Amino acid sequence: MDIDAGPANGCPLLLVCPLLLVDTFIVNVKGLDLLRTLEGAGTLISIDQVIDEVTEKTADASFSKMVNSPQVAGVLSSKEDTIEWSKICFYITPIGSEESIERKHADLFMSSLVQLALEELGLTVVRADHIGDPGMITTQVLEYLKRSKFAIADLSYLNPNVFYEVALRHALRLPVVQIIRKSDRLLFDVNQFRKLIFDTTDIYSLIPKLQTYRAEIANQGRKAIDDPESVGNPISIFYPDFYK
Image 1 (cartoon, one colour):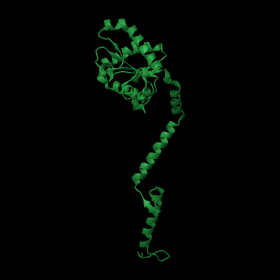
Image 2 (cartoon, rainbow, N blue to C red; image 1 turned 90 degrees about the vertical axis):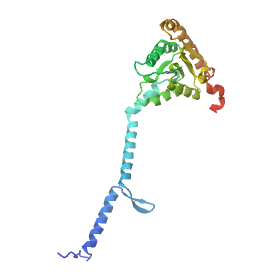
Image 3 (cartoon, rainbow, N blue to C red; image 1 turned 45 degrees about the horizontal axis):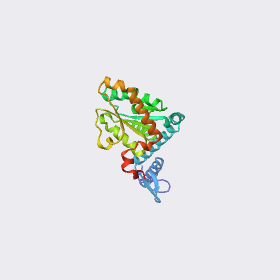
Image 4 (spheres, one colour; image 1 turned 180 degrees about the horizontal axis):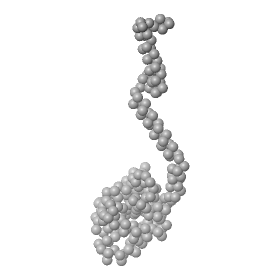
C-alpha cells in the first residue's frame, strides 16, 4: 500500500491523522472540563485545578447535607431549647488531670460549696469538663462565658486559664464573683477587688465553716445578679470608656 495514498478528497493520510488526533483531544479535554473559555479565548487548565474544584464542591455539598439533615437540625434546636442561659452559673476553676490535687479541689468546692450555695438562687452550675454537648471544648467554654447569667471564678492555684476566662467576663462586663483559698496570694491586678477567702488548711478549718462559706457565695451571687455594676472589675473601674 502506498503510504501517501489518501482519502477520496486527495488529502494525504499523514495530514489527516494529526487533525483527527487534535479533534479527539479537544473532545476529551472538554469532557473533563479542562478546556474553558477565559477572556474570549479557549484556555487549557491543569487537571490539579479541576480536582481541587471537584473536591471542594463535594465537601461543600456533604457539609450542607449534614447540617441540613433532620438529625443535626434536631440537635441544634434541642440545644437552644434546653439551655436556659438566665439560669446558668458557669464555674471557672482549675480542673487539672484526673486524680490531680486541682481536680480534687475543684470537685470538693463545686459539690460542697458552689452548687449548694446557688441552689437557692435557682441557678444550675456548669463546669467546663461537665459540658455534655458534642463539639470543640474551647468553643463551648467561650459560649458559656458569654451567655451565662452568672459566673463563679475560683482563683485558687493561680491557674492561667482561669485568669484568662475571668478577663473575658470582665471585657464582656458580666457579673463574676471571685473565690480563693486562704493560702494563695493574688497578683496585683485582681487583688484589689472583692473576693471570698476560704480556709482549706485542714478539714478542721474547712468543715465547721462550710455553711458560712455557702451563705457568702449565695449573698455575693444575689448581689452580682441584681446589680452587676456592684461587682466591678479592673476594666470598669480604671478604664470605663473601654466599652465605648
